[in-house]
Length: 362
Ligand code: NAD
Ligand code: GLY
Image 1: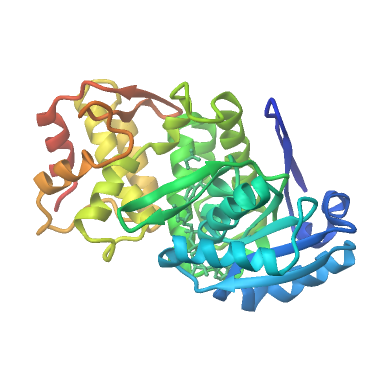
Image 2 (image 1 turned 135 degrees about the horizontal axis):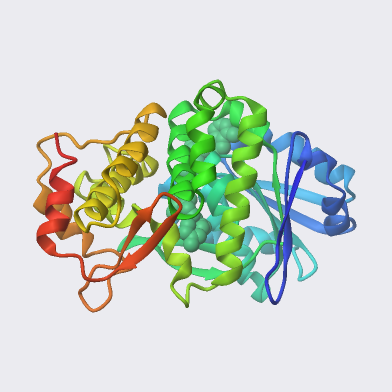
């Protein structure tokens, strides 16, 4: 079992990682005994894990009910949020009750936002079931929903009271979702930890074979790294937390131009990291051999590293300016100096950015 402490000024919490951790956690019992819990999840996860989580909560002394909504990003909206608030009311939740977010980043973000806002804030527990949610969205307290005008436009910083991660649930996750989570995993290596990057290179077989031990170690290291960033810049005020967006400005533009149909988010982030690495090489900071190592690792993990021709680099470039991180019409890009260290670059030359994109189009 791995235990990671998120030491925030106001309210810290534990991340517990291990097989059977959801039913075996004493911390869970301490939090929920004698309280009402509302488990918010999606329609897929509810079928596979809903019953066992309800059983666990009952054994821990809580009175619980579960509310599933239709799986998928399209449910991360005002309508689902409104319905859940009213269901919380009908379930008789009061300020001593808890919300349990069970699922990937979508249930995590929506349930977290319900917890942040219902009766001005309830405690909540994250039980992430996708690799992306385990290594990223369940840690750090960003909660929210999308508007028709854009993704994640409404939300709150609201930290969970506990994060419980059982990597064995990844056995039911579709392979494409695993690969998408792996793009975020590689990201941590590039932005913060060369040793971890080498670990991924050396453990390709274990990763591909879905070895429990390897995934336990990967998830634990990513959570440690994310906790470190979040503790240093909880509300994204100093700019440090922005390093978690490595590859994302390019990646979001790829998603926009391909109308969210061709590439899943993690796949677009993989392509985006290749563009960012190219730009860093053009800026004379990142050694070409290091860009090659990143390219090789992403390829070996089955992630896309090129864009189909037919997509015009100029469209990607234009779409990059819609990013939330654009300030005063200027791009702010996270670029690697070396594997394990990145900088925020605000003065990249437009012709270099274009060239970095062009190099990825085949
Ligand atoms: P998701 O929650 O939609 O899950 C992906 C799919 O996997 C869904 O169909 C789901 O039903 C299914 N699923 C989940 N766990 C499963 C399991 N163990 N077995 C079988 N199927 C399972 O998507 P996601 O990729 O986990 O998260 C994406 C969302 O996360 C986006 O909305 C993004 O904005 C958000 N996000 C938030 C943060 C943050 O810091 N809050 C960070 C990154 C991403
Ligand atoms: N996933 C980016 C963040 O949590 O800040």
